Length: 344
Image (tube, rainbow, N blue to C red):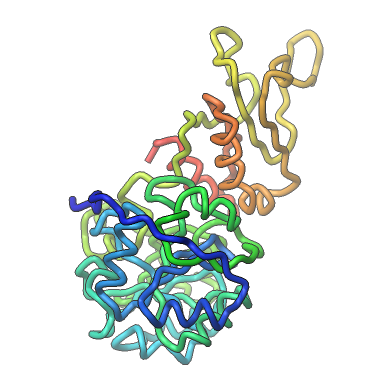
């Protein structure tokens, strides 16, 4: 399993507010981070193999982990894919622009490094206006994984991008991650039946409302080109320095021998049920260095990665996360929680 680990030449990372300036750098083969509605992406010209190689080096990303290619509109797909399948066309018409990636047969001009040598490529049209204006200005396909060091939590603020990549990329387009906070849904559309490879804000039910035959990835697909076609599945991802423990109730947090610095995130206030006192706050609540309670699972997902990063900035030792449910974006959030805990 190849990994780019050689010393990296320090760069002067520029902070930009100009979309034309960012587009000019991308056309010149430079690395530019930019916001989307999911997470911050690290963009590079998908036709430029030397530039793509620099991206893998900057992130420390394994070279067998493919990248998703972004374009400004559904009409731009011929720049990325060799053919458009019926299912992909239906998904793009119904659910894009948005947090959706469709996997299609690769266009020969796309660098083989982008697809990790596979003959398929992930295509996405982001909904974020700033991202789409940038892609329109570049007028070429932009490969863009998440703008973070490989394995760490993704970035949803430009400040977090600089924490990981300052001095390793050419520029950063300052902006705001507008909505989702988790990476896009990935669905393979190359076969007779679409297959959901990676969960995101667009759920299996959403996909099946468009193409009822859509199915989830089966265990028999592990290790096949079908499975390999999506990023974020095989390598460690989304992991903070702190140890992550997943819980459903406060009663799962043991009282004795706890580390000094703790953090906790939940969807609703987590309740400790004392046999003699009914429902009360857990007696450990005051020990948490960082505490977050979110009103909805959508809000939890939007702030999830930044919560992990805030905990690392405080050098907490253990992060307790309340497990998300399986409905809607909860399924995707639960997947990211498990990966943050090293459980997948």
